[in-house]
Length: 199
Image 1 (cartoon, helix red, strand yellow):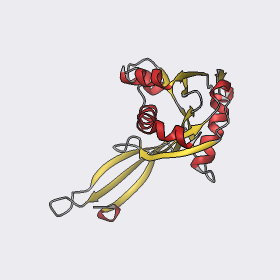
Image 2: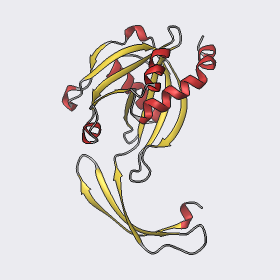
Image 3: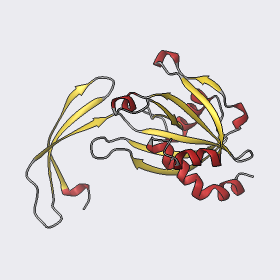
């Protein structure tokens, strides 16, 4: 089935703050035939994002960062997470432009090459956010210190790790956000090809 098999009966915005929540009344076709009754669903609207795993093929290192995340705190977890560079795509921007801009802002590095990894829905059961994920070539010797936009209360600790150490942390369960997990797993599968391409 596809989007043609859904009928939106009504939609309204029920919250508009920093983010937005829309409420839908809809029905959709059933796999065994017929239609559902009208059901109500709420969707968290935060826009779409671009993310980039900064990778230095010469040194075989990745650049990660750590910052406070309210969602992790609300889930009862350590709220300082190891992450990769990411940012929201604004009107008129491409995902590639956001990846490059955010790498400069968040880790102080210029991305010289990008490889698109994938587009994926981060939480499709309740949010519309689509993430466009890249691998970005950087000089990791320039990545260190604390960065971020102070006006947005960003306090981002930047550090580099040999890829093998970063991947060992992932395997040990120390990396807990989906975009970073996906990016490191992709690089584990494609690392030799990437290093050959970026020689």
